[in-house]
Length: 599
Image (cartoon, helix red, strand yellow):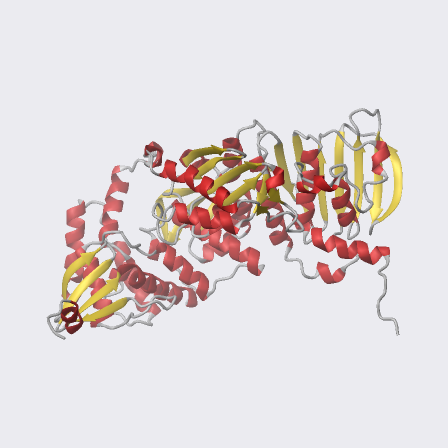
């Protein structure tokens, strides 16, 4: 009995659309790329309900000729490919007919366009891949495409979309990435009638980066350039002092197309390996210009991944371009004169050396008693250090806690790499990781306050201003109540900036714009992957990790003693929140064996 069936044209259209149209952001990407190919100098994007309900894109490009309009929504129609060789030499961004055919098969599309050589425009309406009408329509030069009710005829796909706010973030990220590599085009994006993105279109990559990411990154950008036969590599990276906790700051463009590449990611990891803190990643905008015949853009349905003909050549050229700059004086950080401390700020920064949160824990209260913790924090808040010189402040803290520092037979004998405290007792040496201990302490205290729903907040003398990409700023303002539950009072500060007025008491001396930037990015990424924002143990672990004193950060003798007391005397901490050990023991006999003193 025959088992094979030839699919109907309608089903074939829908299945083919799945390769191109995954979510609203896929539609936004395809339509923007078509607008770029049309020679637009201005692209206006409007979204409703994250693009699920409606996507509207207008461009002032050359428009679509009336004779071509009837073919726009048919499969395999394009002006970009005429021979087999053209497939491997693609220099344009999109396939206007191919993309619109896929999009229209799973949505309701209205296309309005007037070709620059014509006196009148036309409007075409398509639903589920079927053209319903084509009429003359008065219109200015350019093209407007309206996509409504995405996946209305494929409910199985519709239910797999995330919330409108998450889908909107995906759309915003697509627009932001394209705007950076097309700085000569002015991009505007509105989400539910609120402007989220605007680039000036002045032809400068730096202007586009500033519009998307803010002036902090702009001020720290360092340019690089390398040209070889058949290959040009150039771009910018932020000074390594401004870094990220993930690789989300990697922006790769090949022939002005945003891509993902394991090859390029591994190259960036390697070249920055000794120039950035462990566990941190640079922010980099890498542009590669290469002969289209030396790459294959058809290894991925949406061309998000490509394959280089000579991967080693590309890797070495990128490595050379960046490494020579990392070894030059360009990399020396320059002071930000806008952030000079006031006299009181200087005193506060000095007091950081003796006021890490795990010191305050040791004031005769039970580990699990929130009431006692609250009382103690009130006592601490009453201590006025602002009138004391830094030296007097340190002595005051020592006097308060001196009775508790009885290290018994433990003796601190050294400090390695500004990270590991070396302790001697009896017949052993102990190495203690200061970051891991502090991270665990912050996590336990933060967790206790969250359980009690009584996070202690501290009003900042000087509020912290943080530059964010528009998509992340919108996320923060939409979730202001959630941030308040964590102890952060946030507000709009205009442009791409937010203002932070309060922070949790536990990290009041550690909260700067870089920490807050990291926390926002972490929550933003979590909201995209999980579709919601919630306080979880994993979230508290990550905040504690980012806020904890780092390796290569010198701490005071008082703090070293407190760490030793927590780990070796009270034996309260043996692992960081992620399960790594905080202390390692080296028996004396093992050391003697290394020196062949014993066999």
